[in-house]
Image (cartoon, rainbow over all chains, first blue to last red; front, side, top):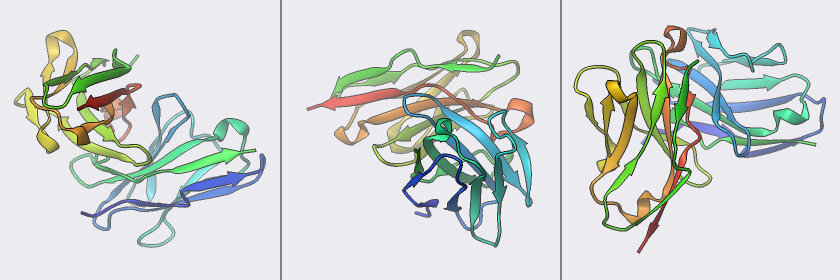
Length: 114
Length: 115
């Protein structure tokens, strides 16, 4: 069964540093997403991406965040200047039907900001 | 405001017993409803979804869910639980701003299965 893969599985970064989380969505999917889950809290939507542009973003996704699909396979989330409160599990997801609800999630990257 | 409530934080059932996980939502329009399952250390897997039509939807792994508009509920059921079903289950509602990707999740229900 095809999978969404995310790297690294765990990222430790100093506060204020830039971090890039990487994702390889399922190859024939057209809709891509990032979600995050702060420990003990709900999974929260960050951003959706379709046709090489952001289609929707949440209030969490401020100017510190950006997404990119640099080639035909990778989908990245960049946080420019990390804050302690960015510590969370970040999930990439992809979908390919109708409006493209996320059908497959990756196993996540645990981001720890020190 | 849109929200999803899963009133049970943790449920324990015996293997072979039936299961019902509750989900209530608040949403301004016709919702798109989803159930996901998360095993420890892994991502979310879509179990089933409701967009329209038959209010009883079948999913993978023998799960089903019923949409009840009058009760704003979308409860997940399985007639006979297997030990491998132990995981955390998340209900979600989508369609905010017309986007089906912007899902609002509940806090999850952790399912434990005893032999």
